[in-house]
Length: 504
Picture: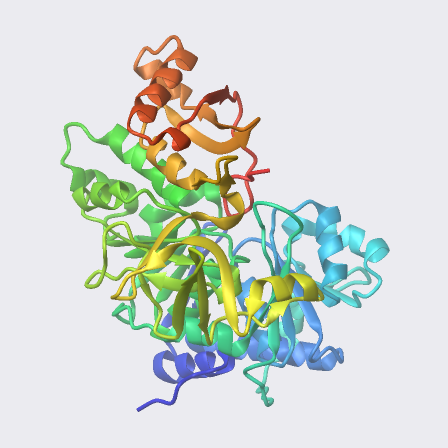
C-alpha cells in the first residue's frame, strides 16, 4: 500500500511515476492547442526550483499573479517544492493593492503575467524587498525583468531538497466580505492531505476544465492538486469571455463552479429549453460530455441540484474555507443528503459551540501571517472557529444556517440569521441579489431586482411587486423574523473576488 503523501513534491513525483507521458494540461496558445505531460510538469517545476537556486532565492517568498496558465502552475510547484513560500495573488487587484500585499508578505521574487505589467512598473518604487521580477511571456531577459521561458530552458535538470511538511509553504490572502484581507499560512501537509484524503472515485484520464480564479484555495486544491494526484487531463480556460466556446472545444466531463456561475448557467439553460429535450440542451451548451459540477465557495440553493439533474448533470455541493485548505465537507454521488453541504472530510472532525461550527484536522491553517491577535481569535486549542452557524448530524453531514458575524441580534434578544431569510427570498426570480440586515431596530431587505425578468413578465411597478413578495413572505414568518424595510438598488452589489456580496 502506498504511504500517505504529505508534501506537494510527493504528489508531483507520484503523478510522474504513475502517469508520466499522459497529458496533464491542455491549453490554447493563440490558435494552437498545446499539451504538457505529467513528466513535463515535474521537469519544468524542477527547472523553476533551479532558477531560484541560481539567484540565491531558495526558501524565499515568491509571489505569482495572473490568470490560470501552465507557467503559473509550474512557478507555484517550483517554489513550494524547493522549500520556498508561494504567495498567489488575485489577478484583478489594483496595482497599488498588489504592492501592499507584496510588502506585507515579505516577497523577494515576483512572477507576473504580462497582463499585469502595470504592477511590475510600480514594484521598483514601492517594493524594495523584491529582488527579482520574472515575466511569464517575455522571450528574453533584460534589465527590467527576467524571461521565464529563457530561464526554464537554461536551467533544466534534477532538483531535490528535504521538505518539512508542517512548515509554512503558502500565504493565501482571503478576500473577506468584511475588513482587511488576512494572509492564511498553509503547510504542505495542510494542502496535500486536503487533496488526497478523500477518494471521489474519479477515473484517471477524466477531462476537467478550470474556470475559477487559480489564486483561490478551492480552485488550486481541487482543480489542480487533486487532479494531478488522480491523473486528470486538466484543460485551462483562457478567459471568462470564452467559457462557452471552450466547453465546446475541450468537452470536459467535470468542472468546479461557484453558485453564482451555476445560477447564471441555469438561467441560460432554461432560456434555451423549449422544443429540444433538456439533456440535448445541456449537451449543446457544455460540449456533450459534462456529467458533474462540483459546487463550493458559497451557499447553493438546494433546488438547483434537482434542476440540473433534469439536464443530466450531477451537482456535488461542498463547503470549505481558505483557513482549512479549503475543503471541510462534500457531498458525493453515492453519499449525499439534500440541503447539506456534505459529509466531513476523512481528515476533519467538527463540533458545535454555541451554534458555531468548529473544525479540527490536518488541513487547518497554521495561522494568519504576522497577525497574532486575529490568529488567536480564530484558532482555539487547534480548533478552527469557522464563523459559520449550523450543525453536524449523526452521520457527519454538515448543515449551515448562517454566518456568526452577520447574525442580527434584536432588542428583544432574538437572533436572526440574514442568510436564512435571503436564501428563501432568492427563490423568487424577480430577486437577483439581496442583503437582509438590521436598520433602526427593524429588519430591512436591500434588493437588486432582475429587470430582464420584470420586462419579460411585463411587471411595470417593480417596487410594488417586491413589496407584495415581502408581504407574502412575512405571513409565514414568526413576528421577529419579519422584514419591515425595503430598499431597491439600481446597480449590483459590490463583490469580493470569489463573487460573494460585500456585506458592509
